[in-house]
Length: 115
Length: 111
Image (cartoon, rainbow over all chains, first blue to last red; front, side, top):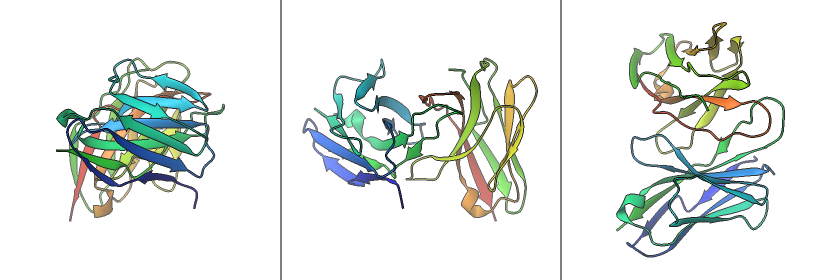
């Protein structure tokens, strides 16, 4: 089945140690998104790619970076994780073409723990 | 993007119909109303989307009055597995969208 895959599902890192989360998709969608969701809160958009064009949200900390080497893969890099970065990180994709609104398909998320 | 307001939590019992109302007073002409469902430790999942009047699919119905300043998600005969957080969002038509999630409604279905 076509889907959005996130690896790993659980990631533990140390305070200040860089970490990379990965997302892949078999939907061949143009747009890929990264969200941060803290406990009992709504998902918060960090940034997204439309094809190779990167779009950062204004309030996303510089500590968060992203790479999209090809259509299928997108990475979230946290350069120096702090305790406040512990959260579920969700990857989503959408077709990104016209018509009615563009449904987003979410992966299962990666839960990041910072020690 | 229009801000949405919905109840923080709701309780129901198995077999009942649940209606969750969302307010979006500043909705723009080109905005659609979209609902997502999120189970614990999973990503949100698209449920239903509409522009006006009524939309129905195999999971839910969406009622939108003529002024479009509110909408109601209706879940018929809920079961325990419908316990989840339900998010109401408005999204621009055409192209792609940034989804700005509000607080959502935490629905608890009891036996």
